[in-house]
Image 1 (cartoon, each protein chain N blue to C red):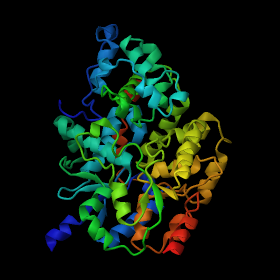
Image 2: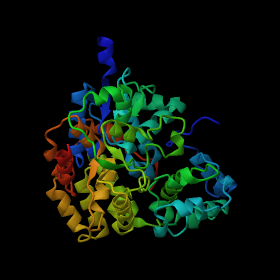
Image 3: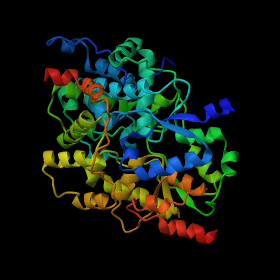
Image 4: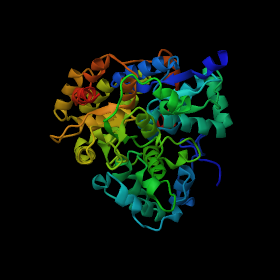
Length: 199
Length: 286
């Protein structure tokens, strides 16, 4: 066994591949390197797709995602819904008979989709993640009430889930005031994301 | 004595949920820790572990958020987390920094303090197991005899393959609660994901899945589900659209109850499914 792979392993940043040379390294090789998992082992047994609790909400099953990567179908795979619907529960990774960490592949593909600025397959989920980051940037911690309000503002779905929100408020499960970090400047520094600056 | 005291000192990372939405989990945890003599010292000025959102949006942010917490943890005592996801991200960042000394140095310079990458990061259940189930039993004030529970760990305490070379926590919840007198119900959907953030973005995907989990627990004759994760606890409560309601406890609540906590009604008013009937049933049986 080689050394353990850290989940957040891609630091320092790899050299940016100059435009035009992108195809020099195959998509599969890029995903393999960044996710630290050997997707060439996949023989399409579909254990991942059959075990995934969320497969009904996906446009491609996880094994199909691996196939798209192997075929180098960059646009299709980075623009698909599946990579955003995946919550990283690792059911697939723990069931794969070939030991492929499929959830890590999904992580990598989401990051690539963000970096390459493709049209996002499931924009409401990206909206949600952005709202969470807004809260983290502001307070250093997640403030659920402002995340939910911000998310509703972005998606315009004000009335959906109102009953659950009110129940949570009544049960004092949604704090009105955020809990926050004192050393705000240390948090602010972390938010200088390379892809945000270049966007 | 001082050595013994030292082993009972732990750095504690509450995480965003326990600090707010799941305050009842934090309170019951503190009660249990006090009773057993564990000194949980909250990390000063901790921040969010980064969660799935930072992990999704920016790898540097994800590492940086988790790493800042590690920089706040003093050497010499384990860092304890209650939230499986926080635990996972803190551990992942630690592994990452071990393998990337240059990044570590960069962050240390940025914050002007060392990051101790040798600090052991464990879940609170591990603290109890190390303390000893026999000693734990000696502290029982309220028997859990007759309580049938589904141990619901959530996804991150043992499933990610990258944890395979680290401490797994599978089985610890049953060991502890069975030692306290409860009965584990294994034949329910205890490994099925609660839906995580999809519960916020796409509840229509999550509700049928949560309903199946609850149905399976009911069919197996369980009184309740016990979760190791505050997000699971919330999702299983708010996304159940069936008439059948089963209380969902935080692990720390059940533990503190067994250790004799009296202020449990204050925790239970924060539940969407009222756990009091189950507790009354227990009391009547005793």
